[in-house]
Length: 132
Image (cartoon, rainbow, N blue to C red; front, side, top):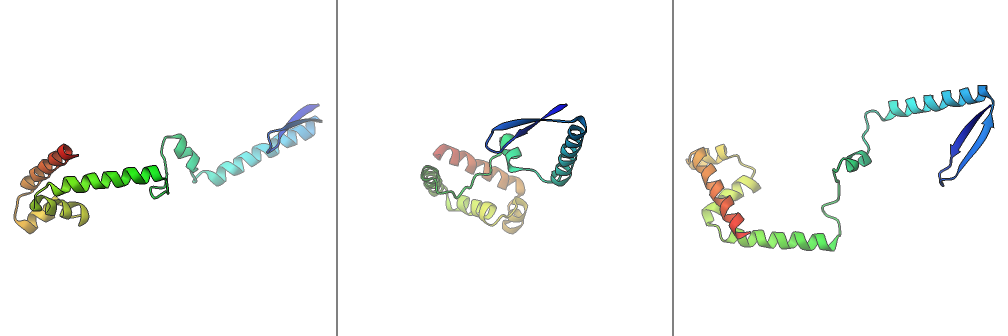
């Protein structure tokens, strides 16, 4: 005689005593269910897997007032820092970030070398760090 232990959804458990044949059949069915589940889910990754790995899929637009306040404060600080840049520097950032232009495209368009634009971007970053 063997014992089969059942665990219910509410957390309670129950044990029953069965014959060896029924126990072997139960084990076979449990293993088959496990294999079927593995076969079914092998190409699917649970979000719980990612959260356990430290990757968060939180909603950036969630109605968390504290997060919204911090985001608004950051945006204000960035806008104030941007106002301290020259028009030429702001135009360069506009092309790079809002128009998604590469430095090579901007260099071709403006007639300025790629290296010169890279240096200008570095100067802009330093200024922004100082103002932020």
